[in-house]
Each structure stands twice: as C-alpha cells, then as structure tokens.
Length: 189
Ligand SMILES: Cc1cc2nc3c(=O)[nH]c(=O)nc-3n(C[C@H](O)[C@H](O)[C@H](O)COP(=O)(O)O)c2cc1C
Image (tube, rainbow, N blue to C red):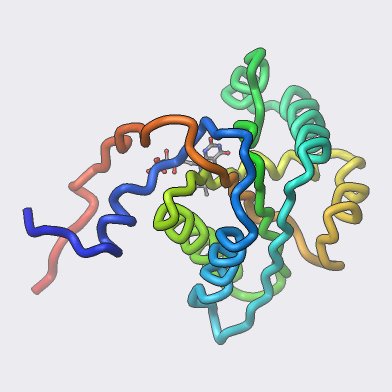
C-alpha cells in the first residue's frame, strides 16, 4: 500500500472511542476542534447549525439519567438492553460533549451537520483526542423534560437536536476498525 499522507492517516486512525480519561481537554484544543466544525462545507453556506459545548459533569450526568429513563420507556429493545447495563453512560463519561442542533427547515441540514460532526472527529483525532458521534442522545428530548433541557443548554428557538459528539483523552489504545464492506463501490469508466 502507498504511504498515507497526514490527512489520510487521521481519517484511517479515527475510531469511535468509548472510554475516556476524566482529565479535561484544553481550551486551545477545544477551540481548534470548534474552528474545524465551522469550516465544514454546508449547503449555500447557510450555517443553520448550532454547537453547544457541555463541560459540566453534573449536567452531563443529569442528561444521561433522562436519556436512560426515556430509552427504557421506548419500544427500542436493542437500546433498552444497552441502557439497562449497570455501567451505561450515553457519553461514556467523556468530559466534553458537543451537542449539534439545527434549523430542520433548512434544506440538506442533516448533511451539513454530519459534515461538521466529521470535521470535529477528525480534528480531535489529529490532536490525539478521542471522539464518538452519538445519536441516541436524541432521547433527551423524548419527554416533557426536553424543553427544559433545551433552555438550559441554550439551544436556539426552532432548532432541534441532530447529534452529540463525546470528546476526551483516550483511556486506552484505539480499538480495531470495525470491518468495512468493500463491495459497495462500482466503477463506470
Ligand atoms: C449518525 C451516527 C450515530 C451514531 N450513534 C452512536 C450512538 O448513539 N452510540 C454509540 O456508541 N456510537 C454511535 N455511533 C458510532 C458508530 O457506532 C461507529 O461510527 C461505527 O460503528 C463505526 O466505527 P468507527 O467510528 O470506530 O469507525 C454513531 C455514528 C454515527 C455516524
């Protein structure tokens, strides 16, 4: 295989990290990660996204309690089983979580936010910071407590949760990459 340049190495080395050190990432690292998020391509440069940085452990734990409660009341058996584990924590105890919300009336906004999320994970990996994109955090807004959390988190009026990204120093080595199917590509030349 050809030797990879730095960008390709970061893309290949990034893994979803599910164990973090409790030590907080630095403000300078956080700022570089957020700057990368804002540089993501987005449809007609609409920028109808919003990023809430959460570094309050008490708040994160309260969010997890509500997410867990709502998952256990949902019909999703797979998630119910996961959330019932004694060590369940939606954000894997990461010290920083970025919640991406967006104006869902904006066309193609899910793609925009996905690209911002990917920029966050790649910027993090380039700084040797672990990350995990998490969608199950949507359960935070599945009960009437959701509107209170929206206020507390400063989510703009009319914006809704898209996903969260857990961030922190990795507690161990990167796990092996889950296998990728190679038969999803065809070439028309
Ligand atoms: C849209 C999206 C939602 C995800 N939601 C979760 C989640 O709720 N919890 C979780 O632990 N991982 C979540 N993941 C991480 C995926 O499980 C992970 O990216 C996938 O298994 C491939 O592994 P890798 O990221 O290490 O390459 C999510 C990833 C994406 C892109």
